[in-house]
Image (cartoon, rainbow, N blue to C red; front, side, top):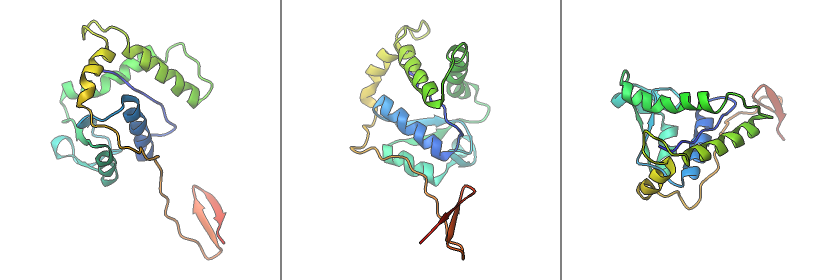
Length: 173
């Protein structure tokens, strides 16, 4: 029940892998399964048990020893379990805070998550951190080297000797 959250400029597969890598390092391991909604960031097509994960994301999960599982459409319990932490953060972290930039927001958010994980929760009858300590032994350990997340761009050189990337032109010798 421990939470970890970060904000990113956009949400795509690259930033999803950055987030998941930071979360896995934060928790120092990976569970057997990672429950996701049916968004196209991780799911290539299908929903629920028929969901087919994007090959790039399957390879990412394999590197850390887990698999992605999509919850069934209309399964209110699973959907709520995935979505409830977002509502909790929206209502309890953001109101009344100011951020200098994205790095400041993420630093404050990480500190807030750490503090929140150490707070007693009446519904759990424990602190999420205490429950996590008991469950941590079941996590798959991180690889010896946690690779940096990168985004590969394949481009060709045009007849003028330039490569085009993100509306910029770069000369190539």
